[in-house]
Length: 173
Image (cartoon, rainbow, N blue to C red; front, side):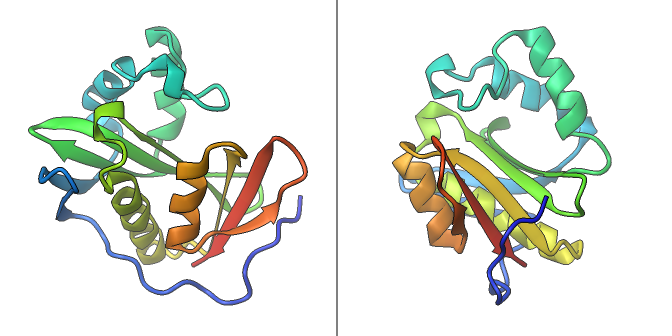
């Protein structure tokens, strides 16, 4: 499969670890994550509101979440989590596809949405990707998910496909 990507690479993004203060005044740490963080990431997804699940993810049953985490916390993925008061409140991941490109997914607990954490998570994940030499990142988002589409555009993603109920967006790092 051939995807379209912007001709010019994006500017530099911040890298983890870093601490940000969200719009609610909460200090949130953005740190790289891996399989060692599995239990705390699992807790976040177990608490995730089913109404905020998109495109079937994250899964809702704990056994399905565990199986899904086996994939997204593996050695060939890149992960950043948002931590507040020692609890994971957001998670962003880049999962390699079969074309040398990486698919982005992000999830933020409902009580932390709308406070800037998602934007900071995506920027920090992309900064980590730049430091790892990743060049092409893409994602799909439901066309009616206006907050997510706005977030992706804000950090530099461009729409590359909008023919179905999902929009495909990409960025060149």
